[in-house]
Image 1 (tube, protein in one colour):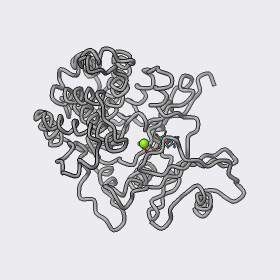
Image 2: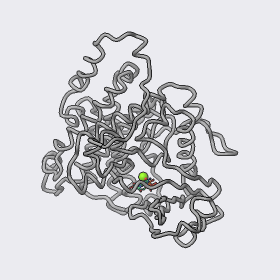
Image 3: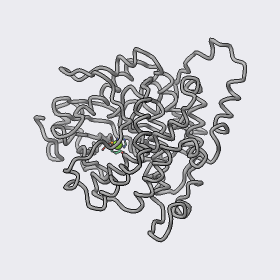
Length: 412
Ligand SMILES: Nc1ncnc2c1ncn2[C@@H]1O[C@H](COP(=O)(O)OP(=O)(O)O)[C@@H](O)[C@H]1O
Ligand SMILES: [Mg+2]
């Protein structure tokens, strides 16, 4: 990396890159409050009210995958090349510039949108319209790219001078532990690793999930509620309610992984609101949640039903699709606990509850379906079955739906 970006040099950088001119003038530049440790995120506001989000990968030399921005850049190019998905407005690219050498990515910033996780936190409402819009959008992406070689080949492109031998399988457990763990995590958190290793059925369920991971379409691979934006006037919009952002982990993957990650993100709202006390058992804690599961269930159900409605074919290919979504949700909860331990060095009784729930999702997914969705698997599938029975000419079924949406304000 040649240049280390900061609020002092970011304007010069943008001018050199041709993204703004000296005349533009700059009102504010600030670090986003929600910035992760992973990246530097600078928000730059120009006098014409255009806002740019300038990102630089911080730990490029130290950890794991140094090519996350490259992935987002690749996705951006794919959208330009294939209008069938390029025209799905909820995933339209926001990328303006990519500098591989300095690992810098610039996106246009959508000031009219709110992060969906924060929206739920602040308003404590869970409108099903929003969940439906997400389900339909995601299904549109998965369906349009499903088993299409041209997209797969495109996503196999590697950064210059590198090879991409295979796609990353995200169905991973927490791996084997080494003695260094004692220095890296707080003492209380060791309990997480002890419990995790004690549940043999858990490790074998994750191993099975990894074995059956079946990459067959383009996936987001980090679809949490904080990577989804919702329009501040979502109630007045017919479409463009949501935008899926942060495509840094995208690739060729298993569609059940995306839905499972999203489902876990909804479940986290419930699980992080539990009343936890050593004198209360897990079942009681789960029932005493400040945000009960029943409040989230209509959205969770709307999400999966909108998805299956727009992509029923996935059930022919994977009859156990819903069960796998539930298992991937369990895995995503485990990864979430692990991320919190690593980044915030924190683990408490609420996390033990989360681990218990995650274990149940992974090892007893059939029973968990009823708990999570509030209805059985066959009831979830009923609307899809009905749709299937409607006589449709065979060739019409095979056609891809093309999405050419226009943002429209109701009554305008
Ligand atoms: N183009 C955008 N418009 C509006 N907000 C954005 C945009 N890109 C990112 N954000 C906000 O910044 C946060 C961090 O951005 P993200 O790309 O997800 O970075 P990270 O890699 O740190 O997760 C997001 O959760 C969202 O709240
Ligand atoms: Mg993010």
